[in-house]
Figure 1 (cartoon, rainbow, N blue to C red):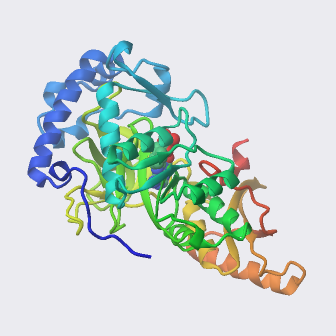
Figure 2: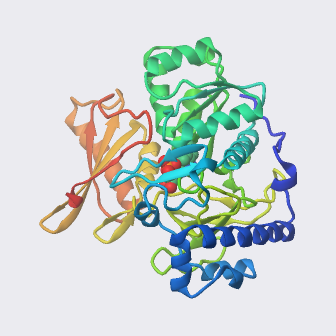
Figure 3: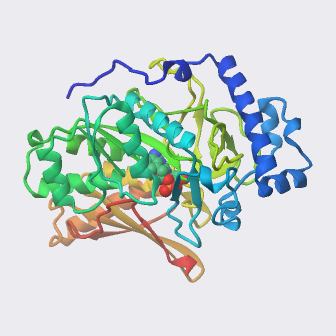
Length: 439
Ligand code: DLL
């Protein structure tokens, strides 16, 4: 595989700003955003009033920490359009978040917002080595979800050829990928694995594929999963991050160094806070990511609590960008399982499973409470090399996985093996946890 390390940069002026210049721009944009939300969005006026603060009090970036947070609940309470800062006639697009519980949150985009969005997606696509010579296969579901449309317009901006195939119908995806010579795959990492599985089962050779790069995001995935996808699809897999409430994809993305995702800080201010106290943590500390939009017109958000757990690095990257990087997120604080008082992220379990020969990258976690004691069961799909008919070998295999899980998680988990190809395959975001305690 040839790796392009030429580090092309889509917008060198803004991606390589000296930090003092970047901070000056951030403050200017922050002050303008605060004035707009204060005067146009009653929810913000009320929040600021309650905190006894006005936009004029924010004179430095350090003052940001004095402002109250915005949460998903604020968006829900103002459903559907109450957080919009422009009249509806200026809103040209609506998207909405998946919303697993209650009402979904609704987000709007002005014409300028759509332009900014495609510019930022073009940035991370270019950073991952995508260019006008590429054929971009978009296998996210088109619809209210921001993934497909976000990547679509970014890819067009770059000048690539877009195949808007949408999600599902994996056999057709593979046929089109091969016939149309797709070079870039865009989907969730779990769907990339589903595609890899199907390709292998169909007995296709990797040589039939022109795939070169994968742009994956929208759900947590481990480094082990990256290696698995790369090896099975023969591509370079890159990570990109975003959330609907703040914009969708295009908030951060990896360059080919693949050591953290560059945050587009001229458009968003990133902070990391202690999720329990709300206190801002020093750079490099793990905590919850909080984002403030600096240029959004239709629905600016101030100090939005993402619930995503990560850490920031301000170390200079060798790609030349000066933008801070966020580490691959470990998952959402609300995905974090507390088992007998120990915090466990599903991605930690994934890392262990991927290291054990014989485990397939398909698993599910079942959490329950039996006689007031939390239990964690890990359903693991195994490949044909694990003999279900040989009890002794099977028992030894389970012991091995359980031991490794216990030493990584610091809490015991029971492992149950399931037959090859029996776990659900995912087309969008994977649902891996069944928490029976919540019923
Ligand atoms: O998932 C936006 C997106 C689409 C990002 C396509 C990247 C690619 P939502 O549906 O609102 O928006 O879900 C946002 O997904 O808060 C994270 O918990 C999770 N997430 C998104 N990207 C990543 C990632 C889109 N690269 C929520 N790694 C976020 C881990 C991610 N988690």
